[in-house]
Image (cartoon, rainbow, N blue to C red; front, side, top):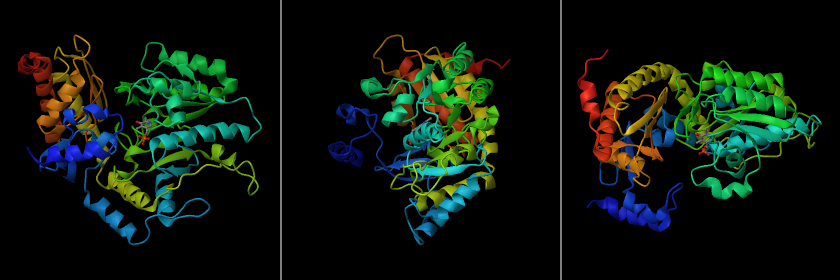
Amino acid sequence: MGAGNEWIGRDEAVVWHGFTQMATYAENRPVIVERAEGHELIDVDGNRYLDAISSLWVTTLGHRVPELDAALRDQIDRVAHSTLLGNGNRAVIELAEALAPRVPVDGPHFLFASDGAAAVEQALKIAFQHWTNQGVTGRTAYLAFGGAYHGDSIGSLSVGDGGFGTDVFDPLRFPVVRSPGLDEPGGPEAAVALIAGHADHLAAVVLEPLVQGAAGMRISSPEAVRAVATACREHDVLLIHDEVAVGFGRTGTLFASEQCDVRPDLLVLGKGLTGGYLPMAVTVASDRVYESFLGPDLSERTFYHGHSYSGNALAAAVALRHLQLVDEWDVLANVRARAAQLGAALAERVAPLSGVADVRQRGLMAGIELAPPADGLRWGRRVSAACVDRGVLIRPLGDVIVLVPLLTSTDAEIDRIVDVLAASIVEITGTTEAVEVTQRPSP
Ligand SMILES: *Cc1c(COP(=O)(O)O)cnc(C)c1O
């Protein structure tokens, strides 16, 4: 028995973990992290775990990246935080200037927040007020998609679909026009028809381009995303792209919107913005949207909204250095190479297992859907635990095993993740087909 058990006891006595049933928290043998090195997290007993979920999709280049550590230290010696309400901060200006030519938004303006949900909330309110600022009063609704996840505040929960035990909050959700997921048969056509039918009361359409991460990595095509964008343009409905999960390289381009050839009116970024170092998110508005808020001082056209830690200088300094490193290290080329490797390895060693129903992947985001023969077997949980026992940190979404490797993953690390996953699935589900399949010569 290592120190870990003592720490788990201290943890559950005082810390309330999100999306976690605390009555069974300790039984599920949580990893208590003390420090990290590169791509590995190290627990209080000194055990090492390869981070195969990028600390819930936020970490991009790795942990304790010397360059990012240096940027943080350097900013600490200047100022940690100063408010953005009515005043500016040099680190934030430099970050916004660096992001401006890179984001897929025309004439971008950056409104910072601390979490993805808060930045989604900002986008929803901006879209709403964009219309009222112009004297248009009927555009008060949103169209969102089946399987959508946009965060846990009441507004972001409302545009999100149900699930994850959040149905209890249904009475608090505001109604939205719900279109089937873009990955469903007829999904794009249904969305286009709903946009046309509801155009005069829609403020905006909210969409996760290419990948619905929290839905279990549901993948839609660039053409489907583009069809929605075209319908929005045609009917003068604002388009909000939520790239909190897919932004900053996860799908092989800096932003997923680029692969769809779409420039949304509002873009929401979070998670990878600071490379996984500090909580920072941002709502990016096109100049068309931004300009509808301009007017006399103290006028009602102002966006009366702002968070205490909006534009935190430490986060901004790290985010700026992070963006530079993505270029300097040619990280996107590695993402594309590792994504191809991951796809091939999953197809060969995981997809043929009889316990596996489906493998979905885009870039370095993958979902392996297990097919338990009965309810209550907790295959997702148990396969993940078996991976953790083998030193690879994984977390499921129900019975979907989610792989979100670091963008700087090596060839050997991708190989190890897939090996460990295949062995864990075989152990828990009792199927062995993978062994036969890997021995078969490739076609
Ligand atoms: C994680 C996520 C959010 C919410 O971000 P938080 O920082 O957790 O509030 C919103 N949208 C998408 C697509 C996400 O994956």
